[in-house]
Length: 117
Image 1 (spheres, rainbow, N blue to C red):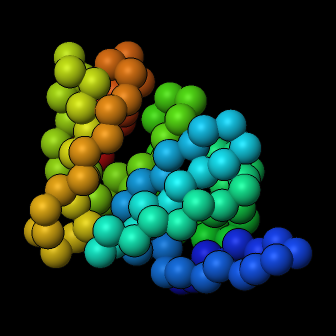
Image 2 (cartoon, rainbow, N blue to C red; image 1 turned 90 degrees about the vertical axis):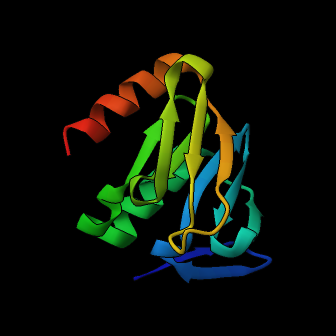
């Protein structure tokens, strides 16, 4: 399925499974896609959560909010080290992983979610 993000200036469209993770900072979010592609959009993470949910329905369940500043595609998770605040993700082709730093408490909660799968 495709995700479409549109505003008065542009339209961005990409496959949902190409999303590795999204990091947010204030009113802007960086969508990290497979192949190292990054797109910055003028949307808060909460807005993107709602957008993904409305456009993807049940398929959107693979995207999980981690703390205040990240949404991750749980299917791309490679390694979680809560004590170091380290989350490593791969874009599916065993390409080199991308590393994100997240609060240890948020990662402990996320690790528990993944373990229940």
